[in-house]
Amino acid sequence: MAEQHSSKRIMWVTIVIAIVLIAIIYPLTNKSFSPAAGSAADDAESRIQPVAGFALAKADAAAADSGPKDGPTIYNTVCGACHNTGAAGAPKIDDKAAWAPRIAQGEAALIKSVTNGKNAMPPKGGASLSDEEVKNAVEYVMSKVK
Image (cartoon, rainbow, N blue to C red; front, side, top):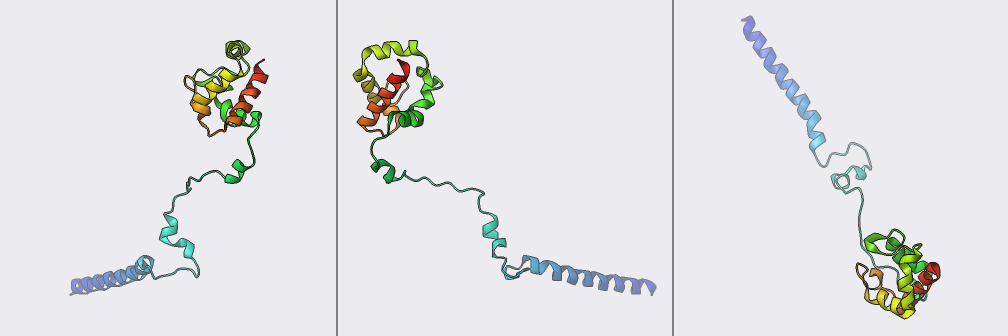
């Protein structure tokens, strides 16, 4: 008879533990349950968002309307990436010996090379430069390498 009492007691303890666990777990899994008032930031959608976003946008048209850029600005933003380091065989800006044969051809030949591209250099250095901006950049480079 003692064994019967023991198994009944175990059954009731198990039922009570199950009810307590359900009472604790159900509110945590129920979507309508709100543990704190105004915690919309704790929503699952906001928790799985990427850390950073990426968007491509065109450059401001206002910058293009301000007129052609000067030689140093164009050199520093477009040309300097290769001509400061010698990347892809580009002559370095401070290597006068490498520039001597190019300077000897004249400004028109340099402008033509920049406009059409030469060796690894894409046309206009890979940028959308006007003819006047190309001329300004060539004049700037010529003034630095003479």
